[in-house]
Image (tube, rainbow, N blue to C red; front, side, top):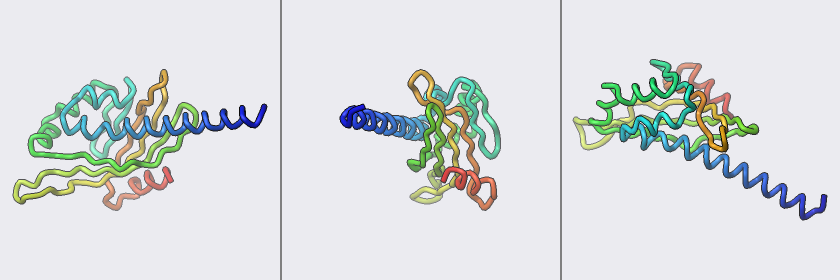
Amino acid sequence: MSDTAALVRELADRVTLLEDKLAILELMTSYGPAIDSGSADAVAKVWTEDGVYDVDVAVFSGHAEIIKMVHSDAHQGYIRGGCGHILEPGYVKIDGDTAVATCKSQLILKNPEADGYTVLRVTANRWEMRKINGEWKCERRISRVLDGRPEAVALLAAGS
């Protein structure tokens, strides 16, 4: 292979990697606006059809359960009261058509007793992704509150 052909191949591989990382980050960060606006279908589309959202208090399996979570009284109460889910960009490791992204997120709520907001929780997140028909989707997201629990710290350590 000529030097030019090798360079083109190397650059094409690097561009593909960058495109994949950007697509994963965009998928992850689409969660915040979707969940805060109550756009249940958009939230569900972050996951594969049988995707799992494993949070401290519950495990939601598949689109129907994720949509039900968005429509729940608890979540709708957050929206009515004023909320924002903020995700940091995260650290992404790609291996072919699978990837793992590790990040932290915050749930911020309007404080009705003050002119401001309160951080309800800061959470460690592990997103297990798969590229299906050219599109990245979350197969499993594990979220644990960073309140000193070893499993939350372990999620972050596993991604570094």
